[in-house]
Image (cartoon, rainbow, N blue to C red; front, side, top):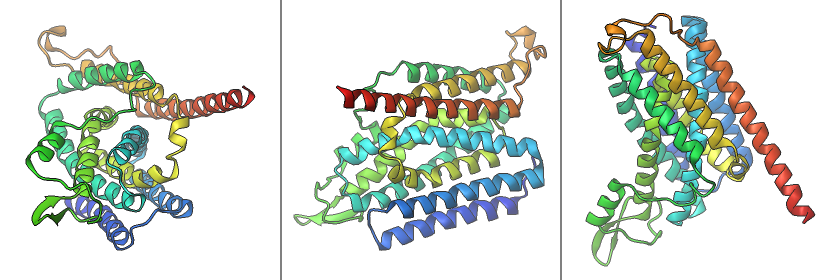
Length: 330
């Protein structure tokens, strides 16, 4: 898939402008969004992603459009799992409800910048070292196993990463939210960081940690950096709206971790099969590709992704409804 430089500039620039406009609007009026507001914005962002996919179909064909939609759905589903931790972070730092929108938005922008760097590094590694697919595949299968093995209390606690601990240890931080969404303020005659600065750092760096599995996963569906980047952008663009719209619903998705583990394991196997199909490691088959190993077509990947997500959602809601009825009858 050949993408002209001007297309990169126009498309990425346009989405960046939308995000910046969103931040500017929110910054002028911190508030708790209504269901109507979040629903309208979510429909808008999902519509943009669908239009982009249809544009890819029109200009580059169904194969690349399928790769984008498969990657976008996978990134979106993994992002929903991120929301559990986002909710915990907001509670951990006692973020006032009216500031949560801006905290999420700025944290997401930080995550986009960091993911862009991660994607660029991954694309270079894939082009230079075909064996990287073995590592990506094995890592996804390992992650899938850990995700499926987690118990129900796995997401109940948030532990600050090393960067967070370093910042809090080196720089004074006020516990007061009087400064609102400013990053620094003056307390007792000294300049200190605000809780808002710590929260957006927590959100951005935590999302980057989640990218350790989501970026290899999408490279298992498409090797086109343009599609990888856009799938990530569109997935994160709607994340803030999902946070407010389905915050309560997240607790009902009891089988989400299992569904995501199945997806990651499937993509991990797909990556290893692709690596074997294009093998050049001297200790495997004498350094020759194993053509008997098939490549899983993108249409089958898309069917599996949609099927797993659909079954996960239906089974989760059915389980939650059954549990609610059982609790009422007791």
